[in-house]
Image 1 (spheres, helix red, strand yellow):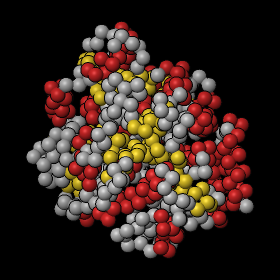
Image 2 (cartoon, protein in one colour; image 1 turned 90 degrees about the horizontal axis):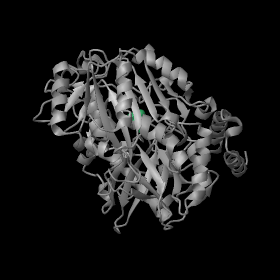
Image 3 (spheres, rainbow, N blue to C red; image 1 turned 45 degrees about the vertical axis):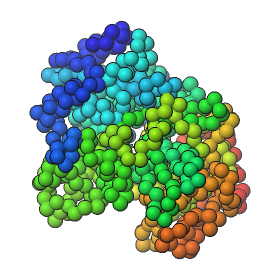
Image 4 (cartoon, rainbow, N blue to C red; image 1 turned 180 degrees about the vertical axis):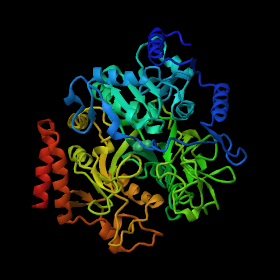
Length: 583
Ligand code: OXD
Ligand code: MN
């Protein structure tokens, strides 16, 4: 039990609602972890994997109807509907509390309520915020223990203060009809019920560190973004930091942990974060970024020694795997792991599986939860309380056509426009159709806690406030040929593009001006040791006016949603783009 009166009152109130049999206050100790693991294993919530091969690793399966974030059931509950904006689902706070209150009523009967205190950010940092999650799931507790700084350090940071984000979660009956993820940014509160899937229930992550934090950040003058943060050291020994926004399952984790190709000896990449960046203006007038998380909740399929050796090494111990294939050796396997599948196994739905079945062994959105400190490429600066200074902001999407490999915006305002017009082909990270282009401004469409028109305005305002702002770029690793094959090798080779980006930031290379921004000169992307023709590079950098016309029409249709609230600078950017293309 913690002596903080505000915490005690709130926990008592939530317990009165949910009626748990027991309340357990967590301190984050090893003994506590071991006890919870033993309990999770005894109830079947966790399966202990082979402890010789995978020490400290466990497997969990979610309900079959509960394998991804549910955007249609995710709500922003502000007093004014217009505050949530046209891209969020909205419910009035009173209605949401009443509706969810009915589902929460008695939902923890026969269960234990865990009081999980956690920090987003390292202790003692000006960026750091405190959250408390009340949950009836041991799986959630153990994941929160990896993804956040959980336990005593949070109680210490909070002291007597009432300034913490209040999260309430219950699996309830895992019924999709009674599943809601509601955010009350005016009350610093999150209520999530009826799900056991990470993105819906690890409340420090998407719910707090993006939706609630973006709302807080606008009020307090800092930014909460769906961005990885990496450091790149060049052969001269200079390290610069990049923050990059990509929609879910577009390779943020791979990029953050990039291994430089052998041909580019002397470069090194350092991982600061793979999903979320909180950014503030530093005293030196630059933008400084911090990763508020302490672990990675990465997509397993496609992760291999070839695509992401650092992630593979990170998940060899103390990792929770969710919805992957369970092998006869009591280890795990997933599609795209780069090793032969086992002759048989138990699939993500708990059913017997063989490769011949033609079914997937692991769910496409199956995950690993692993401590960031285990990552071989983790940056020595990743827990620096001041964060790291950002030289470049990079936006990117999954686009088979249209977007070139890389281009630079003309200035900050144009960069905001580039971010606001991002589009990407959908993936399995959210429930719904896969492979359809959807507009996803700054990769924040599912995560912005307020009206996105105001979010664009806030970005524009930040540009005025940052004396020495980062340069803004757009990348696309996913361009394909007529047959649908990727024409850029991606993965470690993406370093070649990052190197150009940082050379631009340092004013070391020129560029070609195009209607959409500055493109690299053909020779400025270093292709040493890469088997790629100059024609392919030229195709990758092509800006085809006809496809851009369609693209721009689609963007414009999306923006009509915002009506008069859309900042006039965005409309101005459109007009300028039209003029440059001479459409
Ligand atoms: C994630 C997501 O899990 O974006 O990071 O869905
Ligand atoms: Mn994400």
